[in-house]
Length: 292
Image (cartoon, rainbow, N blue to C red):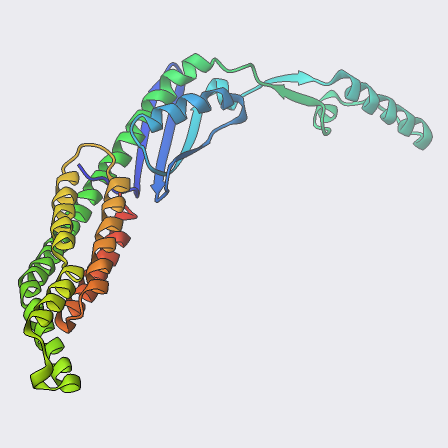
């Protein structure tokens, strides 16, 4: 099934005092690139998250944002910085002596001075956190991929319609191709009679020249290959895997055949059809850039 490279999904999970919320966003990209945004203390989970995403997504730039809540994450244990407290006390005692002030240093007020307390956070239990983050990531990726596939269905239908138009144009070229030989013969005979005179035209030589021109300008092989590429394109859309690169390759081959047809033929009507074919191929290439 065709999937777009643009999508969004959110996943949540809660257990053992932790609650994880994960947002997964993806946009177009040539390869599978994953960026993970999570607290520094959980940096060791980044490879697991990337592996989880890439097990489902093969192409696109994916951004994963993780928000984790829990008592062990949000709160630290207050620890008195004794050195700073003693320095404050000595400074206040000096100030009291110089100013001739009475009274003692108030403990509550001293505790409110800057840097008296530091908050130490225990090393997180990574495995316990992963037991929550992992399922949340899976849910977010699944919803993102579901959105990508829904968008991909719409893109696939547009691609099928455009391939249908291309097939119609190729059929018109195929219908016009046989008549080109007679057109070439008539034009060549007219030019020869114009320059040599009617009595000097050798009919056998004329037929030989016409045959050579017809062989050099024969486009049968090109339009047969073109129709084969169309059929392969439609078949590839049915694959249950990433197909963007193969579709892009097939479009390059279609463009090659269209250019060859255009360079070989001298027929104005076929040349106009080739222009339309190339326009459709360009539109197809734009759409394929959005496909995984």
